[in-house]
Length: 109
Image (cartoon, rainbow, N blue to C red; front, side, top):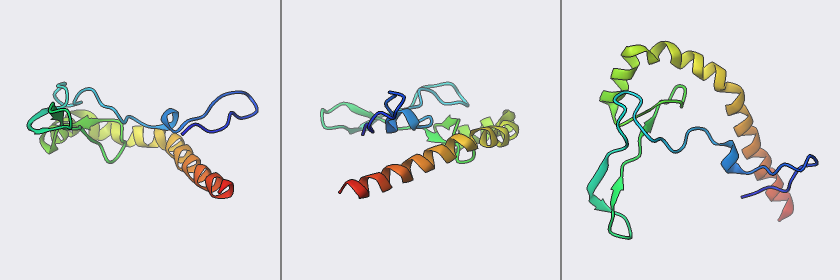
C-alpha cells in the first residue's frame, strides 16, 4: 500500500520499509533455499522452502537448526549482538510506521 507523498515529494511504501524478507542463500552453507519436490503450488511447480531468519538480529538466514548452529559457532554469536543493536533504530522506525499507517487508516474510514 502506497501512502500519499509527504511534502518533500517522496513516496513511502511498506515495501520500502522491510528488513531482509527475501533471502537468496543460507548464511551457513551458502546454498539457495531447498526445493520441496512433493509440495506443489497452484501451477504444479515444486515449492521452495523459505529460509529461517535469525531471531536475534534478523539479518542472517538458514535452512534449518543445523545450519544455524554452524553459523553461530563460526562467528555469528559475536556479530549478532552488534547487528541487533545497530538495526534497533530501523526496527523502531518500522514499528512506528506500522502504527502510523494503522492510525491513519482508522481516521480515513
